[in-house]
Length: 77
Ligand SMILES: [Zn+2]
Image 1 (cartoon, rainbow, N blue to C red):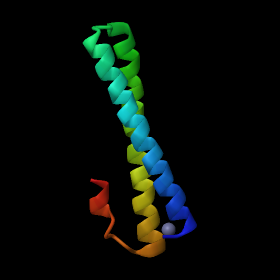
Image 2 (image 1 turned 120 degrees about the vertical axis):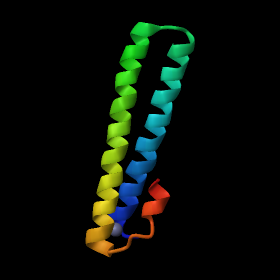
Image 3 (image 1 turned 135 degrees about the vertical axis):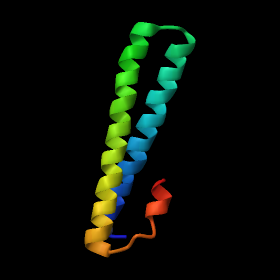
Image 4 (image 1 turned 90 degrees about the horizontal axis):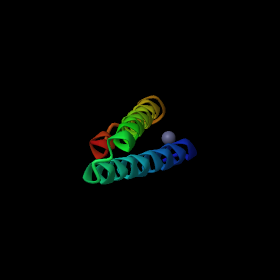
């Protein structure tokens, strides 16, 4: 792991937590049948998923260009 890897994995953990939180909030709004908030939160959750995918792609890209190491890909699934 290089410094860039470390930063990328921090981003991954951060994005992952944000997504969990976004979906948690969405679930709560769903339970309260708060459709207006739900719409907003669904958008935030979709964005959080997109961000997580982006970080995953960056990690894969970084590993294949800098380390040519594919062993961690399964850990991303
Ligand atoms: Zn690296």
